[in-house]
Length: 311
Image (cartoon, rainbow, N blue to C red; front, side):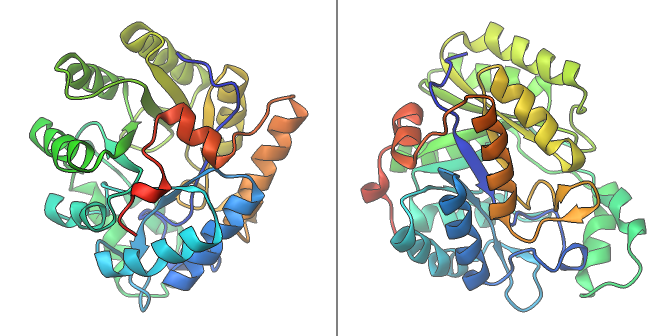
């Protein structure tokens, strides 16, 4: 692992996992996403990971017009790196998932490194009164479906987005096999270091959230990539702060945000993404770890720069 001299904080402000019923603080409209992103950046996040939602219902959508509504407005108010999802939302086609990246030509995109059971169905029984009709079925359908990221699809994203626009990737690795898939594309020279490897813990269908799971992913990445990667940690729900803190102590970077957890403490909903960013920043500062600015993050990740995007 290439140890970062400073910790890069990523904030994923809305995502496509949680639904409006689960929290009144989940950003839905473009203006809410702008406010969430700017607040997170002001709190210390140097990278903002972005999805779009239907402003009327809160349902995840690939609509590039919605992305292009909030992206320029965020750029006007902050110098944070904007990281566009190519994972999109459940049941979206690859073409739909790439629409926002084609429109925005961003510095950074997420790229899931394997098809998987992306299970959210176990969350549905916790709620009885749904704000919108789509929510319950959206979650329950994950019991019988998969999120598709085949070798062909991954290669298309690398070529059509990465090579076409000079966009770099946050490689999302939900299990050990995803690290080996990433190594395959690196061996084929379709990718160039440094790799930004986001290891993800605690999602049903992926690797667990035990500290030993994190250590195993770190050891495997070290063996496969040596000094050619920067490591980041994403942990779902209640595991978010614990594993992020542990990973940062080990030289990694961190990701927080309402996409990954709706809470700022046990039983306490986060009222904003900025709350979570401020909390992890405070912890890291107490551990004498410095936080990377957006420009320092660009240098560490070898990004093309904010002037080279399409918004």
